[in-house]
Amino acid sequence: MAAAAPLVRTLATAAARLRSCAAASSSGRAPAAAWRTLEPCGPCLRPQRGVAAAAAGTEAAAAQEQPPRTVPTRRLTSQEAVEALYGSQHEAQRSTFAAFYSSELGGIVTDPALMVVQIDDHMLHRGHGVFDTAILTEGHLYQLDQHLQRFLTNAARANIPLPPGISAEQMRRTILETAAASCKLNGFVRYWLSAGRGGFGLSGNECLGSAFYCIVYTHETPDDKIDEYLRGWRVKTSPVPIKAPFFSLIKSNNYLPNALNLMDAQAEQYDQVGREGRLSSGVGWRGVGEELGSLLEDAQAEQYDQAEQYDQGIFVDTDGNVSEGPNMNVACLLEDGTLVVPPFESALNGITVQRMMELLPGAIAAGMEGVRRVEQRHISVAEAKASKEVFLVGSSLPIMPVVQWDISAIGDGSVGIVALQIRSMMRDDMKPREGSNQHLEVPYGYLTGMM
Image (cartoon, rainbow, N blue to C red; front, top):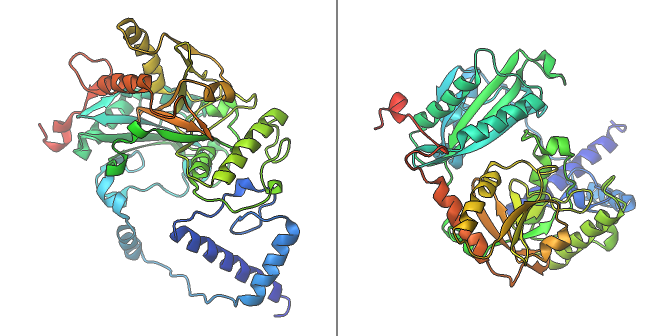
């Protein structure tokens, strides 16, 4: 028993610190992110000043805390497990998950409790899967074929074949019929192609066959977000390392850097640690280089000093050039009227930004104010911050003006006229119209009887 005492104290300390994190989260203050420290300190990953501080905190907590009470783990019957699936549904699941197709089930379900993926699916435990999302607008899927082409290209890059018996044409039909089964006129359709099930190994060679999933869901914009595009967003240069170019170009399930990017931007407060606890050039992010390290350090220092919330983070490549947001592209309007979009080298080839660049020459010729030409080239963070306008481009936005970058105002700090014009152009393009090659009508009558 004496030999087990240190282990008990360690477990007690871990539990105490996890409870501390949970308490902070429930109070609305997110725990500090792990990537902001050079020496993460254990279970709750709160920043510490060094190993000595972490050790001192561990001993102090162990002296104060008693081992927590434990309870036996239940072994469920099949019926109890099914009841738990229903009982554990959250409100958004019940109200917004409308229809789900699974090649493992062989069909569509509309009961949210049954929209599940098996634990041995390699998409789940290895991240070996790709996905894409299309917009459902007024009973039509917008740019589904363009999204599907990118989806299939990414699947090939990820070495994921089509599921047995499912062709690309069948996949397209299944997406449309899942949208029909949802009985929703507006929403989002997201679909995945997974390496499949078969075990918990690393290689997809053990999988029995790839799997295809598709879900239709809705998202109601809160009242305070409806006119958000008129206020604009504030962004920050993200300290999270960008993915390598090969992986940046694949819309895979590995969105950990993207999630950390956004969470870093949304964190409202930061623990007040010294400069030694922040990113310093040449230390912390391996291989970013001295110039980029200094850039990220300055951006992080600004965020620490402000202790305010940003809306999004912007990824920067290893040369100090702007790449993309966590799930949207970036566009910068220069003083001479040139609209610059970063190349698709370390940024995903966004379907919406490609459509924007396709439409703009005609709009410019028709008299759109403030923009003279469109270029796709590298742009440094400094040049981007000095732009007349900056905005983000993505299928769910479709255009969101940026009014502040780190502590620098963009232009005069207000939403620009060019961003608003392009937003109107993109929203008009999303509306179904006769003869459009951008829309596919959902066949509601097939599965629902809707007319």
